[in-house]
Length: 303
Image (cartoon, rainbow, N blue to C red; front, side):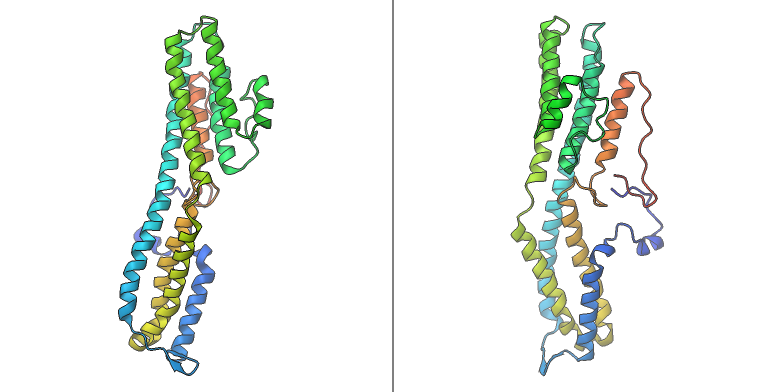
């Protein structure tokens, strides 16, 4: 995720980070070269004069813009839904940590339970990003949970199961009232819901055919546009076509990037920072010193 103050409007015109220029540079060069060739040939394709004007492109441009807007909205909806579920993980983890510190009988060591909540967020991030399940989990799990997590297909589910059994043990020993344990189970259910919802987003991409149609339409529009403009604006055709293609190609690239919001692309969610925030919040509830908050790198990227 790009985290930086908004630059001055002049600098914002020339900023490179976040503009996706590096991803669409080859497409832009192709469109510019094609436009220059059309201008040089005066709109002729071999010996045939392509009789196009700007009128059909106005109609096609509106339809393509609506289609592209729907695509970017669908991708951003997935991105924002994923962010809300991670917000729920933070809230429910804080609630469970606070409840276990207050409601469990004094003298019971609740630190393994709170660290298990941190471990749940960590393994959830690892699973969504396809990383090894034990990445950055040192010191978070009890001995009986470590082996189950490493061998599990869904490590976060194993952590939730262990947290539920920990509450069951406290209730069986009379260290937690049954009605209070049931209330805490609701928070565990909310964590499971957040995990399942994020898995749904990660495992259900937008239909591939939808992307193919949009990709072909954008390229065909930008490839034909120079023939429709060359007779009216002449030498300005490559500049105008390149600008129009930048809008279409950049929005397509952005929608493709945020469609799967759990990766390590520039505009994906900063899951490392979110897990670090959960870690800091819960350790503070335990009375421990929270680690420093992660900061963006030199390129303003927060992972």
